[in-house]
Image (cartoon, rainbow, N blue to C red; front, top):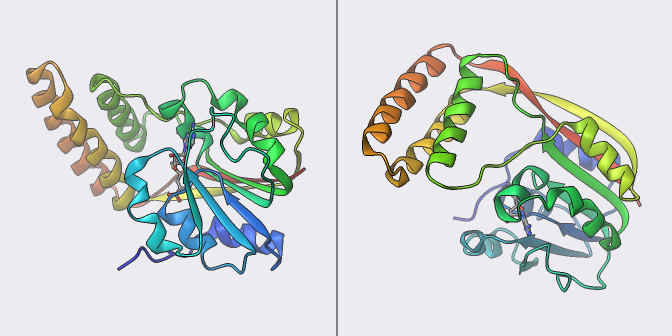
Length: 239
Ligand SMILES: C[S@@+](CC[C@H](N)C(=O)[O-])C[C@H]1O[C@@H](n2cnc3c(N)ncnc32)[C@H](O)[C@@H]1O
C-alpha cells in the first residue's frame, strides 16, 4: 500500500497562493510526504531529487508518473540546463548539512538557474532553547546523533533564509509561519532516532545511562500532553 497524502496546512497554503496552474514541477529534496502531495496536483511534469538511496524504494509507487532522480546538488551535472515552473524546497535547507556539510549556504544559488517561476521553501524555525521538556527532547536526540559519530540537521530562521533567497536572486513575495502543535508522534519520533544511535556509542556505560535518560524524558514529555512549541514556515518566492 503506497504512502497516502496526509493533508498538510503548509502545502494547502502553497496551493492557495499558487492557484491551480502547475507546469513543470521540481521537488528539490523529495520524500514520501512532499511527493504524495505533488502527486495529487495536475502538473505537466514532476521531477523529484534525493541523495538518499533508502528513499528510492518507496518513491516510485507514490508518484508513478514522476521522474525520480538520485543526485547530489554539489554535482554541477545534476539537472544541468533544466528549468521548472514551480520548485518546492521542502525541509531541505536544514538537512543539507547532514549530506554536504556547509553547502546549505550556497544551495539556493545552485538551485536558482533551475527556477523560471515560483519557489516555495518550507522550513523549521530552530527549536526554542527554552529549557522545556521538548527542548530537552531535541537536545538529547542531537547529543545521541553526535555521540554515534553522525551529522545532525541544522535549522535556520526564516528571516535569515529569506535573505539568502534574495541574495541568490529570488524575490520573496510571501512569508507564512505555522506554530507547531507537538504531541506523542513528535516526541516518540525524535526519541526513537536517539535510541537507534545508542548501539553506535563507543562507551557502553554511557549508552546505558543515555537509554535510561531517553525513557525518563519520553515518559515526562508524553505526560504533559500536546504543546504549542516552535514553528514551521513557508517562504514563497519568484525568479
Ligand atoms: C528532510 S528530507 C525532505 C523531506 C521531504 N520533502 C518529505 O516530504 O519527506 C531532505 C531531502 O533533501 C535531500 N537532500 C539533502 N541534501 C541534499 C544534497 N546535498 N543533494 C541532494 N539532495 C539532498 C535528501 O536526500 C532528502 O530527500
